[in-house]
Image (cartoon, rainbow, N blue to C red):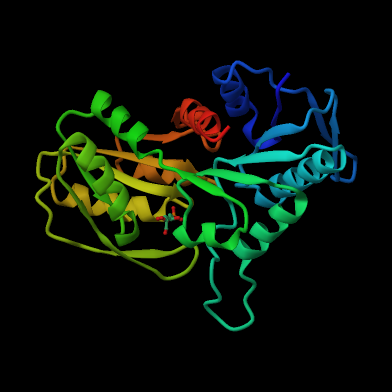
Length: 291
Ligand code: R5P
């Protein structure tokens, strides 16, 4: 065994697929809870000098993060010298600055804690904010899932037009449209509160077209519902929705389908009913590249 591959509770299937791609075995790790909810971790394999730990830190963020800290610190204290941490979905990535006085900048705090716990390198898929990388003093490799998403659209949607539901998603729509050589545009969204967004109607030439809305994260679904209503009102034929990270809190998926969306797909950075595109091969290729 060259290195340990450990899958945290949030990323077991993805970790198994990455291990298969790397032709390594997934390490048996015992992770359970004490009756009061506290997490118990035990690594059952022999301990080499190197490990790859795969764990998304999304919904429920705190539990997955705590488990990751326990795994990392444990590996470090068992003598592992290089711990490569794959965080397919980097939770706590939204608060990356102090908007109001007194606010905790949680992205910075999480970055510092990951380093202090023993991470040597971070690999993550489409970070929510680009500056998160700067919060670390260790290498951070950000991997784009857009080529995988473009490939999926190419196979499933006829003559698509790609729409970002807000300005922040325009880059994703553009990356895909360049790969597929198709049109793209974006809508203008204003966030009123964590649960409420407003989207401005815009004149878009989508009548009779198959439109694919692309975002990095779907959380409450509000952003997608608003965008879908606008596109349907403009006469779009099919509205398909794709994202990288399907956070999908509570009944988000129901709300999206109720708004008239024809299909929803995402990658498997998080487990969900719509996680049809696997990032395993892509992650494995980066782990090989920086071996
Ligand atoms: C915002 O900047 C993100 O890219 C997503 O648009 C947002 O997280 C979606 O949130 P929700 O699904 O709650 O509207």
